[in-house]
Amino acid sequence: MVKPDQRTTDPDPTRTDLNRARVTSVINGKGGVLKTSLTANLGGEMARRGFTVLIIDLDISGNLKLDIGMRDPERDDHGRSIVDAIWSDKPLEPVRDAGGRPGLHFIFGGRVLDMVGYLATSSNGDLLPSGSAAEQFAKALGDLCAREEYDFVLIDCPPGNGELQEVALMASRYVLIPTKTDEASLDGLRGVGPRVRKTRDLNPGLSYLGVVITSHNRAASRILREVQGRLGEVGDTLALFTSTIRHSQAAAHDCRTRGQLAYELAKDATSQREQRFAALKARRRRSDSDATVIPLPAAITATADDLAGDYEALVDEILTRVAADENAAAGEGSR
Image (cartoon, rainbow, N blue to C red; front, side):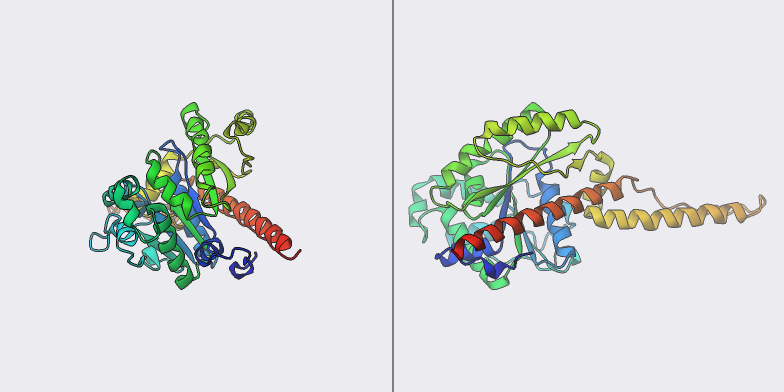
């Protein structure tokens, strides 16, 4: 993996720090395509591998905290720190080691982010130090990346708020698009293209990392071929990840209600299977006259291991693509 400090071609310090942190917007114009779950699980898996990762909730719904188990009303500012960074030029202050996970940092989102849309569209935006809400957020995030030296930053973008999407894209190096294979999700995917092209006027280095199919039935290879054929409708070269995130409603439900990432749920599922097996053996050893009932641990879905494997495979692909992109950039810079 190419180290962050090898990317030095951009003369602007803010943009350089953002590029080094590999800031990635996880975005689709359609909701319900697993953007939040993807952000949480990719960030958690990268942190588990030793990277220092920041995940940012830029959605007014503020649900990213649920996926990482950060139900903490005293810390939850509902996105106020992001608004303060844009309007008052205050430094972003993430929660470090979010949910007890070393190397995973987190910034809350929520209802206060409505103010970002107001700042982006009102005449007051001209009063911001950097001239716009999007550029001010990029500056604040660049300052944070310089302080913390993040390896990756993942931004969970809202589906229907154009102002917040532009704020995320202005600070990003990469665009990652999750999509289901239904028409509404693909329409949401196609809507990303115009917004990316508009943002490139001020952030010319913005590029697509790829498209990942979510809630996928692995037996439906024909559908994958159809999706690949339709990516050209976006107007840019979009690469489809080989890895897909399978449809597993039970595992997704268990993850969110328990505040666990897929790999953590899989670990608990393995432990629970061992405990259930031991309890069943103990029951069989008891005599019929023994009225004591040995309780079985509550069941965790058997698909937890498979879902965790999907995220691991996707992180492998992402790291490979980022390394190839950075090696190519380093080669061009040495000419």
